[in-house]
Length: 406
Image (cartoon, rainbow, N blue to C red; front, side, top):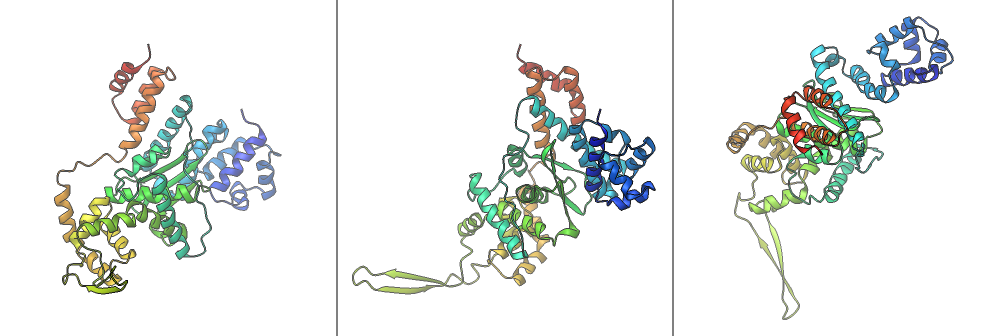
């Protein structure tokens, strides 16, 4: 049971997470601001009626304030989301979808603790001040290069970005989010780092969103929640994350290598200097590629997009930013998107779409089986988590029992 000081501290924290002032909350409670100050400092008891009213203001149940600290910290996520996503969280079906993912994050974190594994991801912190859009973009591209080097990817395509994040201890999943939101980054003491992307978006866009939210893990971890919305795309933090995602998924070296492999990407004129060993002189020769041979077509962009598993638009802008063509040519290529789409469809006819949450589910299934194998959870607990994962409980139990230590 928590005391008045703990309760007051929790009430203050939740108010701040919701972005409300003491004056605004005191007005709703029909109390002087000093009374609310005394409540939050633990110097005044809060009545049941006041607690019920506070629960209405903060969009949660009265019992939420009285839960054990760790559980309460996990619930903070829902309080914040309710505040920043009112149009979604006020819909019972949508709220249930996000709550389910958050609940699974908490289940996974609890299993990690049982198995004595580290909760927090071991990824570097690249937090840095941004004074301009140019600085933000440079930071994103520089860190993308450093992360590729750290993770030993070189210039190769990253085949499964969700799996990569998961391997570093970041919870990753896809959830039903508003169409205007491509992703969400959550940093919570009880769950660690978590990333949600929009399950309604296509594979290539989800991959870009995973990389984008990964940038927030690397740069913006002091925030408890960070949303990627259409309306905040001009913020420096979002520009930095977009620059990171583009360079992380499409490294300049890899793009250049691919262009060279198809004989493109060179300037219209190449100056070649030959050293003459006999007299120490040098001879310069102009090499002119065949006319039109260096033009990058919508088909080329489509193949590049498929190679790095990004959207056609993302590939166009990456090539433009690497100075392989100008803005006018970029817009021409974008106008040919439907032609490129048909080309990509030819490649993808045999591809089977992957369940958006598959990597996250695989993580939890492994943790459940391992916890059961070590005797950390009961049969009933295993079946309960299986229900939350929406998988056949008896099948999971049978698999777990075959691995259990006798």
